[in-house]
Image (cartoon, rainbow, N blue to C red):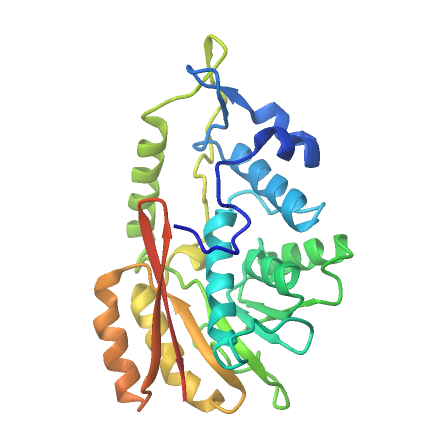
Length: 303
């Protein structure tokens, strides 16, 4: 079950989404039962759906990412933001704090800048997004500059070091209510490629017909999530990334109240808890989030 404040509770209202983002119309397919859908194995269709969701629900009218970059599902990303809001509410008389006095940091924001968009449009928070990839930085800045509802509310910073997470991003006089992160999941390019191929195979098992004809769009880059190397994998995968994040977080204990990261692999939790104990961190929360049959989670900690 999605978070109760998640705007994306039901199936996609495609007719309304097309009104908000007419480009989506060219990707609408007719299912055998007469209903409507899109081809989720087609990267352009998924990107158009994301753009439509952001236009319809968050008034972000101009959103685009470079070909081959991560195109994450908006509904699932929204859950992380709303559950973080609940975490902040526990220190605020159980009232979710809103407005520009709340500042959040999104580590590895990517070209899509999804988390800062949802956070600032849902709660009015000020957001900082960091990334190591110059093209992601350029795309994220373009999205912000093209939408007046985002301009002045989201700031993008480049991380120049592969080893640092907070260093050179968090300024000496800054304080953040929280940080969030969707770390690279895979530990190698080969593992990422194999997972991508499995995803495409699963998505194309049940083809959706447009009228009486199969959708024959060339697939080329067909991954509905795509992703560059730094978005999908790093040495040691998500476990080592989060462990580095935990170790470095001690230096920023007085500047960031809640540290948090998504944990895709449940088996990694025991190793993460051990790393947290090693740093003497006892205030730890594990928040589970459900999107249909899929269960995800994030771990949050503070000093």
